[in-house]
Amino acid sequence: MTQTPTREETWELVKETTQGENLRKHMLAVEAAMRAYARHFGEDETLWGIVGLLHDFDYEQHPTLDDHPRLGAPILRERGWPETIIRAILSHGNYDGVPARESRMEKALFAVDELTGLITAVALVRPSKDIRDVKVKSVRKKWKDRRFAAAVNREEIAQGAADLGIDLNEHIRIVLEAMQGVAPELGLAGQGDIAT
Image 1: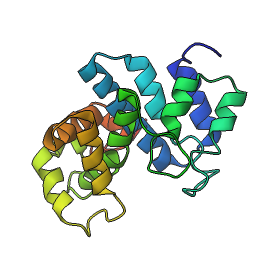
Image 2 (image 1 turned 135 degrees about the vertical axis):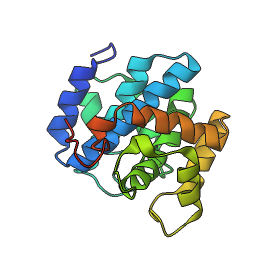
Image 3 (image 1 turned 180 degrees about the vertical axis):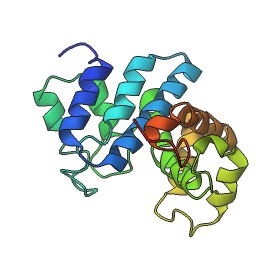
């Protein structure tokens, strides 16, 4: 597979390797955010979306920082996935032994990964459970409360935005609007809606 895989091929691999519904939703959120950033920068939306969708494909098999995503890379190489995609996935965290982020795509993946989790948490504590009711100021308010979504690394989010040269509020807006655009797929379209 020397060319960029299709979105359908990527989703099939995600379904094969990832059984957890919440992890799949996280990957869909990151895909949406990556597509939004590709549009923002005038880059390849399909490629960026695929990187976002696939970035945690090996997490259930390798859930430690020592192993994820390092042990996932050989799986992709065996299947002939392009090195550009593998490198971006390898660089999406601050882990020892993975490449430093060089491309704008790699920097965007790092920047959006943790933020999608914070935004999801903000949506889930709203009475409506609808991400479309969330505003940037709501995210910033919860940002300040370190006990809220305590596992979310706010320093990495801020670092990621800075690495992209994007103001933090603008970064939150871009990712929030991207996620709002796929609210039903994320299970964040309100209490009465069922995710597809």
